[in-house]
Image 1 (cartoon, one colour):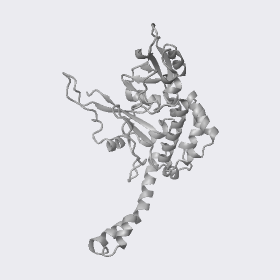
Image 2: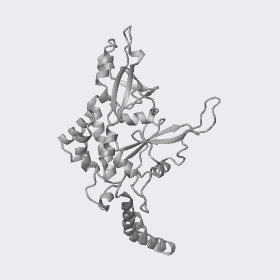
Image 3: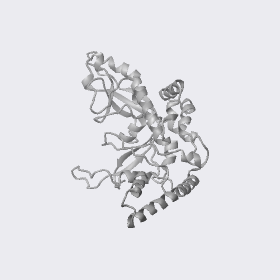
Image 4: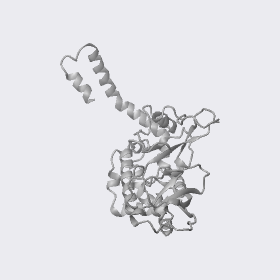
Length: 341
């Protein structure tokens, strides 16, 4: 309203249509608190049973894991007999580097000609380098078919793709990135990152140890302080300023992130369909037509996947953020193509 105040006080502007605009703006300002409270009251009627954290749902999500089959890239093998594949069971909530310690030790013995500086492991799936800073489950949802199990990945011990991946500095780098993302998500949700900044060193260490060990109970002891509203009722809903959501597409190098409030001006809770069509007006027709010879010229319909689940598009985004958020506090929505019927 600062701009409107300056216009009203400026010489020569207090006449005719300008006066009417000023009065309308003042009336609009006067009505906004009442309208805002009415919208909050309506939103609370729908959110009352959505806002509370459901430990049953969240625990089920946390216990999800992905079987992975690792094969060493032929370009890195420097002995006659290639190694057999190495299998790991990687938690969905964790990060790939945290699950690969034994695999790294196993494969490095088959590449003795590589220097230590060249032995920084990175993974590839069908030609796409995997971003180490995204949760494992998000990567799988975005790039692999649901039934593509075990997930077959190629291990590289050299040729790190610096232009496609963030610089990697070991587990400490993953931990640092997690903390920064956690702070960003808290800032979106509450308008400030104080809830993360005020955590003690031991609390942050507990969260990280729980992620490494895939321990939902230990993580929740601290994580609840970030997600759970401090107040009850409508006041708790009003604490949530914006929803921490990231939308990913297979062909985009980074997620789409835009701040959305949990409910609209009329008090209706924002649905997943409304969020996606706001970001991508042509949703679900967002993938190009097939260019393969003999194929029908139609685009693939997009499907939204969160934590391996395809939620109904009318699901309130608030519920998804509360129950299906990743360990860093963000809800990751992967949009993947499905053949048109």
